[in-house]
Image 1 (tube, rainbow, N blue to C red):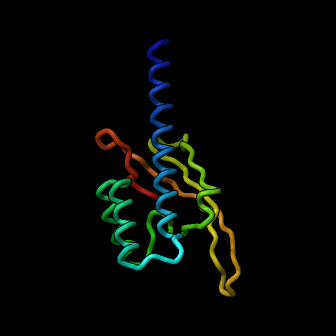
Image 2 (cartoon, rainbow, N blue to C red; image 1 turned 60 degrees about the vertical axis):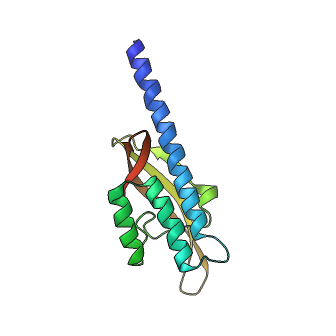
Amino acid sequence: MLMSSCGQAQTNTSEKQITAMLKEFYTAYNNVWSTKPPLAPDVLDIKLHSLIVRFCTTKLADNAKKSLEDGMDLLTNNLASVDLNEKLKVEKDSRKENEYIVSFVASNSDASGRIVKQQVTLYVTVVKEGESYKIDSVK
């Protein structure tokens, strides 16, 4: 019984650390994108790359950087949001090991320029590298 309790406590601690890391990453990532006035492209690239290297595995960081160079945002499925900080939710996906569900409401504009709210759900896989957790994939 004691071993089961220790294992559960360790799992809960890990989940809390991962949840906090994902909230920290997506909040900081959103803040870079939503800076007003918008950052110069070279400054934007430096700030995004710094966050990506800090929070993502090397494999994902390389893919995310290439994706950004091609005009796509792999880490948010192209749906960043200025509302992210108010609506950001992170929870453990009980169906898959090491996967978390990150959700938020994105504000975009339609062809006429009206603001359109859209629910975004990302499935984020996290792995432990050394003493810290890193984002390994985003779907």
